[in-house]
Length: 126
Length: 149
Image (tube, rainbow over all chains, first blue to last red; front, side):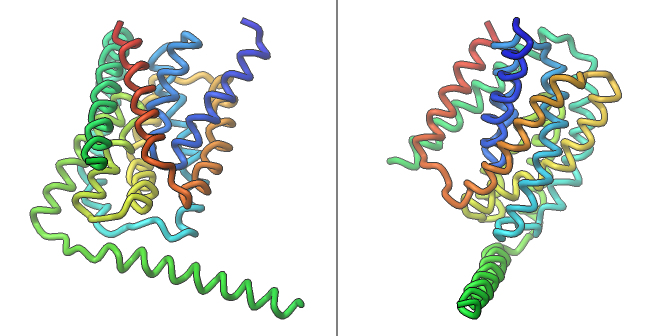
């Protein structure tokens, strides 16, 4: 593929997922499939890129959200205690899993998330 | 003229402070044992998913914050970013340590993500309508099917 087109698509996909990420709607859940399906990038590489770019993006959006008064810290510590331990476990498991298994699992994860979102949508519109 | 301008600014400041206060008072749920357990249990799931899939923890986190901490949609979306930040930091370190990173796509994709993130953060004031979420879910579903096949 043309190098300029690749750069353009990288930035465009990043931009789209960044908007959703900044909204707190899950940027990575669309960035990773976009990169793997349209650009044929390796699953693990996409996940690593998503994590690192999320960190930088989160710094900026957290400052903005804090200024708008949308950040709540009460009770968050309890999520972090177990979350940190299990994220280490998850990341280590991803490192030793094969790409095809990870890709398949990610596909199922996306479908389940989509179905849950759909159910919430239907419930709220009853 | 200049005085009215500064007055306006001060008013803005006070309204900003007010919104901060309302955020604190909104979350006056008593965190009892049951809630602590729910938070820690869901934290484990969010952490594992976010580490294993390198993302998506925020989407699982939003309903948790709404149900357990009784936050409204805007506060829970913003706070979800705060929740998954430390989890992503640790996962990212493990991914980098294992070499799952490439500097060229990282810099270009990252540039897009950061610019988009700032736009998205400002856009939270005008939270997207529910129909957009449904479209988002449908795109996710198609992407998921494509990855499975």
